[in-house]
Structures are given as C-alpha cells and as structure tokens.
Length: 258
Image (cartoon, rainbow, N blue to C red; front, top):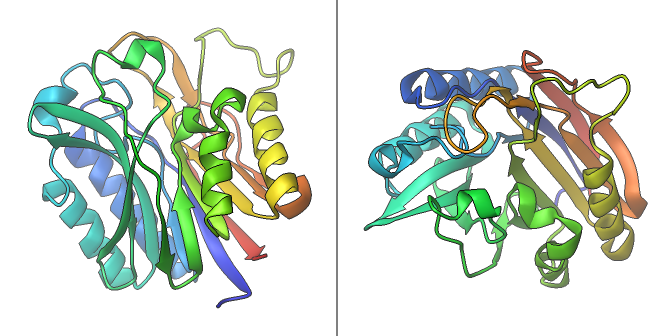
C-alpha cells in the first residue's frame, strides 16, 4: 500500500440548479488536480445541483447515470481518483450521495448520507449502510458532512474499525449571510469531531466544502464558506481551506498515510 499521497481538496463554487456549470467546474478541478500531480481529488457535497436545491427531485440522476459518467470520464482522462458528492435518484427517492471513482474511471464505492438535518428530510431519503472498499490507496471509506456531527461520529468510527486508512467527506458548510469570521471563527465543531476520530483510531480524515450562496430550499440566503479541513492521525490539523463565499480554490496536501 502507498505510504503517502498527494490530495487535492476541491473547494469549488456550487450554484443551485446550475448542473452544466457545476459539472464544468468539477471537470476543471479534476484537470487542475492532474496538473498538480494529485493522486486523489475530493470534491464537495451535492456538487451537481447544490445541497437542498428545491427542484432536486426532478433533476437528480441515477448512479450510474449522466452525472456520474461525466465525472468518471474526467477521472479516467486525468488518471486520478476522485471523490464527488452528487444528488442521486433511485425510483421516487432522492439521496445525498458520494462516489469514489478509480483512476480507470470506475465507481469503487458509494455512500448515501445517513445523518440528515431535519430541514433536509423532506427531500432526501437517509442512507442505511456503510462500507470500506479497496482503492489504490488501500482501504478507504466515505461520510458526508453532518454524518460527522459529534452525536453521529460512530458512523466514521465504524469505518475506522473496518480498516479505513482515509475517510473522505464531501461537505456543504454554511453560515448565516451576516456571519462575521473575525468575531466568530468557523470550524470548531469539525475540528472537534475530526480530532476525536483521528486520535482514537489513527486514521486520516478530510472534509471538503463548497463555496457560494444557497439559492433555494430551507436555507436560502445562507452562504457556503469553504474552510475545508484535513486532519491526520493523533488529531493533527494538516491544512484548512480559506473562508468565504467566493473562496474557490484547489488546496493541495501531501498526506502521510497511517
């Protein structure tokens, strides 16, 4: 197994309902990650339509489907692994999902968000399973955003118990429109829960959030602000992304694996 990898954290702008533009940005991040010699790129939650976008029930695609095929082809062309948060439709159900794509453009694993916020339950169906699967990195797993709340951290603990070396977590971290980063710095919740997990289990954990305004749904008018977070074993903060609704950036991290 690899001892170290270069990880790209794609803190990208996601616009509600702008499927084509969002996918174009995702592919651009994949290509930039290749240029910067990344082994793995992690992209945000619901990068296709935006988290809780009101018309997701009509616009969501199955997996495999149009959205996943575009992302898989991007990973194959660039020769890097990609983790992407997408909106998944299966029958009359919609899931907040993530997929792990191999360098060959194949879907290695899928996760459906389990710990849904109350405001999201009218749209998304909660997932009901966890899995660890083999990638070129070794055994890995996925969670999504609020799956990592302190009260639901046993989800990630279970992945660590199952042998995951790295847990990737697409996120959509949002604050009120008038949030002041200077007086109320964002991120203590995630540093606390990620720290507890990585200290207990000697695993690495990376959460990647989008940026941009939430344009519809229960949190319309709030803003996603990045602050993506990578934490290594023993609770060490390895890097944090910039804050702000316009803070789109590819953060690159050389990660030593446990």
